[in-house]
Image 1 (cartoon, one colour):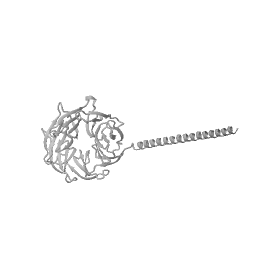
Image 2 (cartoon, helix red, strand yellow):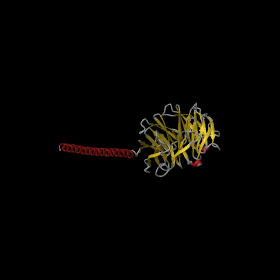
Image 3 (cartoon, helix red, strand yellow):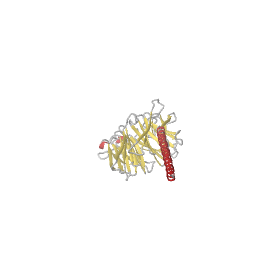
Image 4 (cartoon, one colour):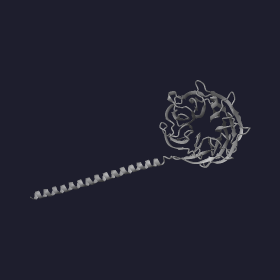
Length: 393
């Protein structure tokens, strides 16, 4: 009997222990489940917060002000912006002039000087500006000429020389220009040519060579020029993109061409071109934006394109500029400024856009040129002034 009592007591104690163990395990499971659910909610909350932040910052562009022409400024028919140090030089096709503004505070540019064409200069409908030491080379479309200024005093340019188109040059209705070394390269749109000028002595620029369009070189209506290493890329309005080897700067050699409609490339109405790392980005009046991998300049490969639509604001893209991993574009028919993430060039993402509100107070109408200065964007559409926008990312 004592044995049975002892066994019964032990059995009861063991039963109670197992019961408590089950209860403890059950409580632990509930606790773990609760904590897991809480962590899940926290993760979801974090994701929602991140998504919310992404959505809140999706509005990356803001138009902040307009700078309007007045009697002392040369801002009638603003064409292009060319920054140099704390100043920006602005070409004016209506004033036939060069406006100079202090952009130490890029959000509040200040007029500091202007130069207007006269009987001693060739500045009718100025287009692009290139800088070489203390000299500025201004290309004139109507005069088909290069006007040279001494800008030792940046706010008081002094004309020192000019070079006008002739039977042996290719400067007719010139557009884009670029300097590499001691040479100025000019897109002679009216001559279907690339003009090469020796500017080692800026006061006496010398014609060196002209490369004309032919069966093997695509230079019909060239507009914009960029250079990477010893290769030059020229976008044309009528054919596509010409690639030249400029190892010998005075005698460029054809390397390859990206022809409109060849291999289904859409480059009709090419107007501007930029380089981002090992990629070439072109803007077209007709076909939008195209991106090419130019790791091998002899064999460029298209990796992406953005077709123009009313919604994306890229109808008749005319000008591009790049800041860090972002591409900015303006369009003449879309009347818009568009911000595009190109960190992955094969997958460009439109982040935001601003369209002109047709009030006459903004300068995005007929968007013709865009230039990024720090976190500010200057836009012009051949109107009497220019717009300033800001961006965040």
